[in-house]
Length: 460
Image 1 (tube, rainbow, N blue to C red):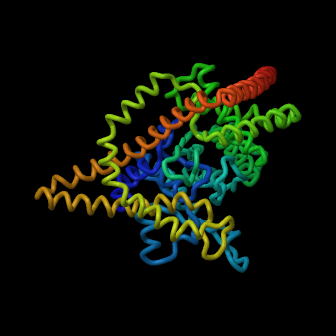
Image 2: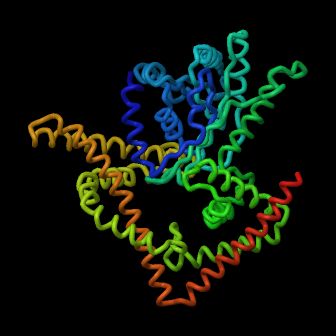
Image 3: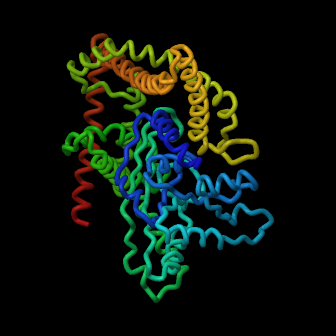
């Protein structure tokens, strides 16, 4: 009941919280009798997004320590389809725990064609790579297949959550959903016991999950991977001829860039280190000139004209959006910074909030504040116009103009960056020429390495 009632509201709020949400393989979320396995970079946000955009209801495996008793336990289990799992490493005094009930509940759900989402990393940590996995998903599949005795089999579908920034308002999210994993002979190999079978299956699951995120093996490579992606992604997309709306094609380009950077960090370390230093220096110099997230180099005059017209003629809608949304936005931001952000800690300490929950809490605070605000606006509109039809109209106008206002501000900032770049070209042409030539040289070096990487991959 609560799940069904809240789902439309949650979906709308998520669409407002993120700038863009893209899916690859979304249809695979709807396969019956499936265990969905996902990475876990953003605590509560990860399952909320999947549940909001799935047509069918989901069941969630969650740590038993979250459930409590009484009404809370009833809400979690009956209203939100949550299945408690005991995590032995969190149990005090070394007490033995049993997850027999959890496994049985999963077997029954899968036999009924339901879908269960599980986070085999077993904790939330905001990193772009796939960490070591627990074997629970594989063990559930093995047990469920036996439980069904030939009446069916459980599928395992991998998901990659790719946030541009897991904790920043109006960032981007790519949800990459794979096809059901083919375990080949692992499921029928009689020479291994179920323990070894589940361990091997878990490694297969990890490889499939890695394929769905911009995974890299060494944490030390994170900065260079980020910077090379920032510099090369758009160029390669255009060079290869990938359409700007082809989300899967763009992801593959980025995946290829990550793989090539990793390869040369290992096999051509000296050259890659030289380019990395040069790239870091260039980006520092570029940012010092006042440019960071938007690259104005290749924007045409027609783009500037179109953007200027949108800014001029879109001003009335922007003002309505600001009028209807600035107060709840300021309140939500103040409440989060004042009462929650200060508690975010780098470690899981008593009374402090783990960083992985920061984005989820920001979303929760904003959702509550905006819902209350829109309710007040709707009631005021109904009283003002003496008609309750004003309620849905006020809600629609407030939500849509609010989203428009955010995009308007971003577009306006882009236009300012272009104007600033043009002023720099006029006032300091030598600086601009240096930045452009340095950028071109770095890109040429990286592209040369990439061609070597393509040759090596073609031979393997």
